[in-house]
Length: 375
Image (cartoon, rainbow, N blue to C red; front, side, top):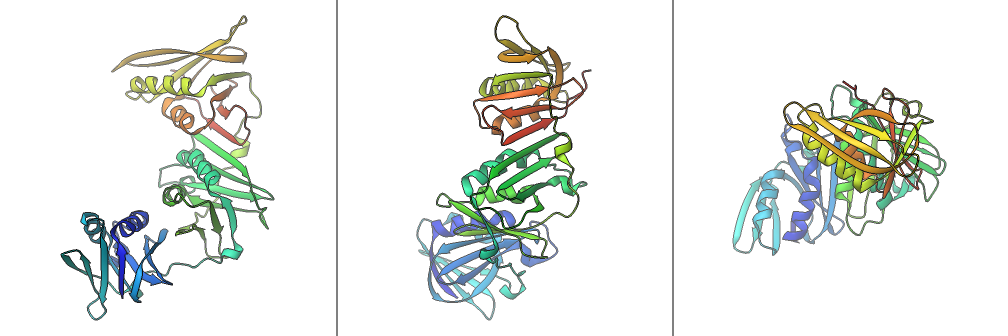
């Protein structure tokens, strides 16, 4: 193998795939990145066997070939180079990659590309084409609500469902549920339901480029995998096996009190209250107070013995009766950061039943938060 590639393209490609490198693995090759010539371009791939990322970058190819080299060593080295051409050439006998940039010459010991786990090749004709900007927004509004608890793998995933011309993403950690739906530009040939690790979804949003308009999602038959194909990159993820909670049954269908409030004002109040509340379980009390003669208000209160207390009032248009309810302020802040609408509706029934956050003017997003005990 002998190729010439710009330092910028190589550094970019390595940053795309590096998050799939396995930091702790019994297989040395999983700490490596695969470098291979591929139809006039250079292909970089990394995998930890659960998540795999591939990126293609422009290159001048003098001689075909492939090798794997330690990802961290190679990335750190390329990052120190000036923005000049980099020449990579492989000694196949010793599997050593010679790396030349200007007057600096380096040899990196590699492992044979044959030892690298095979990366599946998707049949793009079998895929569903999704609008990338809408799909990224869906991921942003849902993935954060997935659990980080490894004891409950199903809750570490995002449920993706398609039915006719609609796609729905849902995630829950047992304390909150985030659900976002969107119309499909091209109706799916058949409905399906899968659970994708939330981390893989977040990585997909991260690696998509400026010139990507669509992403093609392929679910190969019987493989337990999903593949997302972009213009110059591809992500493959193992699916999570198991039964996802019936989140639709948990979303309240009615409310007794509904407050319409400015998203930025509510977010600012939550950020201020969180500074006090984070020292004591993140509890924030919302006192929802209607006013017969005009706009009502929400009092946002946080109090901890260690730090002090915080009282913030925000205007709100309220229908229904007054109610005092407590939530985890971190959960409130996180949904307000992604809801994406100027105003939200907060719907509640009682201080011991879930609260619902919805964007005003759109019915494609709903977020449910379990209340905290009013101690």
